[in-house]
Length: 133
Ligand SMILES: [Zn+2]
Image (cartoon, rainbow, N blue to C red; front, top):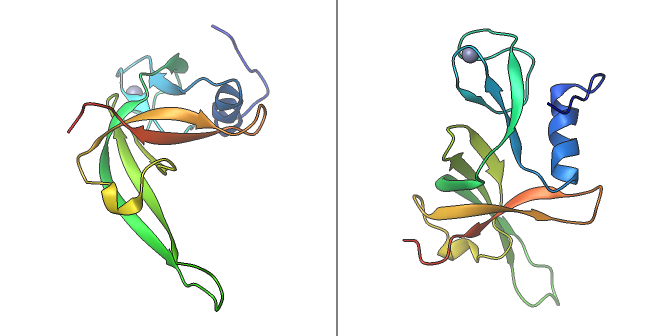
């Protein structure tokens, strides 16, 4: 496996994302997927965590819409939704759906991860999965 010897788990996750890869830690002992990145398995306290690619598919667990107050002269309020996505592999991830209007986001909606941003400054965001309820 490609190792990142000196990097902490958070940094390793970010380096994978920077390369356009959504990888999560998996526990060698209990088999659970782990997120946020950490040293110790939260399920069984094992130290044997290894990085593996994941599907990037998941379901919206909950969302919070942030309303930005418009100032005089500004056309309209900008709403921004923060979502918690339950990945198919188990872990829950906080992100947003930049391509979907907040009022169109539904709990239970199927979503798919993609990477937004430039090389070296990418972030994981989600899109509504086409053809899914
Ligand atoms: Zn474990």
